[in-house]
Image (cartoon, rainbow, N blue to C red; front, side, top):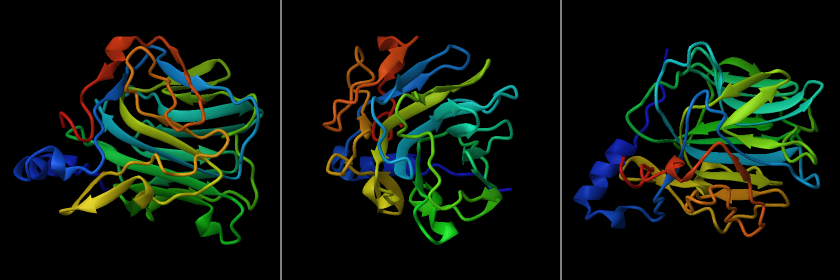
Amino acid sequence: MGIFQNNLMGAAAAAASAGGGGFYSHQIEQSVRFEEDAGDKIARTPGSSGNRRTWTVSFWYKKTHNDNSGNHMVPFGADAGSGNYFHIRINNTDNFQFAGNGFELIPNAKVRDLSGWGHYVFTIDTTQASSGDRAKMYVNGTQITSFSSNTIPSQNTETAVNQSGVEQELGVLGYGSNTTDFAGYVADFVLIDGTAYGPDSFGESKNGVWIPKDPSGLTFGTNGVYLKFENASDLGNDSSGNNNDYSVTNMGTDHQVLDSPTFGS
């Protein structure tokens, strides 16, 4: 059994020896904190559909505890009902689960490191002829290739992501009468509509550690969003240039924290 190790504690030490802020080309000054069983949610319902076959999700994540009491913790998801759903979640065995209608990827490695931040990128491109190119997952710049479950979506499958009228939810996901919450810290959340970007669009290796890169110059697409969480009074403010602001539920200014991949690690 492997465990995903977050490497930004090493980055912080290297930054200190290099003179502090000059180590990072992209500074992330804050994150947002989600609390389990509190109904915390940052969400948006698209008014028009974007590209449901090709997209990217990227975020920096710090786990707060390893006891989720059998619940599934959901950083991001969308549920259109009738079996048309998508979620990125940590299941009750501490594995990330990247799943939707017709596909499921569960890495063998566990998510149990509470010591620092990790970077996660999930891409879908169901237009690809090769099944291995349709769903990919990266952790700290490295593609994951070892899975306990590896069911690939059929070619040209349309997901619930970027679907008109379907809420795109950060922090919680409802399945009918069931709701699964999330506990942890998230920073620099990006949803790309229409392009499957690799991890080097969001991070880079420096002195042997994976550190953030500014995603502002990317093509975000119709429903793309960049959540920096830099305004404590407006945590759902979109910095992509699309004005795709997310609404905030059960979260106040105290949910913005200064712990981030480049500060306070």
